[in-house]
Length: 176
Image (cartoon, rainbow, N blue to C red; front, side):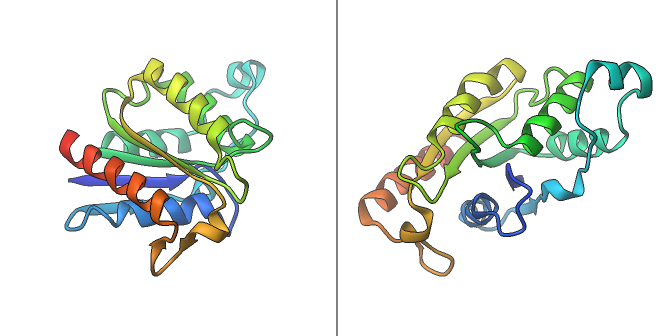
């Protein structure tokens, strides 16, 4: 199985990228490609720019990565209750090239943040929006208070949250 994972952020220290990598590594024995959104630099989307310049070729690289996946794991970062500007821009450009962007791909959606809601607003927006672009969302999990509840070596530290995560992880495994 080929797994594509990424955090929906361009932060060099992205906790969402860390979390996406952690979750992807729970699927041992599979090919895992962790993407960095910094590898997909794009101008700010506008219909005027699209009409003048067309679609930047790098969009096709991102689309090909998604097309190669059997499972896509995205940890949704959140800025002011919504998608990060970088992810929203990438999403806008790619969906103009391929409206059915996820094309019946199975997605495990995550979110985390330093705060108590764990990026829940961004996760909820993705759960609502992505199926309109062909996503089959087979699991979702939000980890609040990342710095208190996560350790790179030990994983999810809070027992109750870890139990919930493992339940969701097993449901995703069963859906594959």
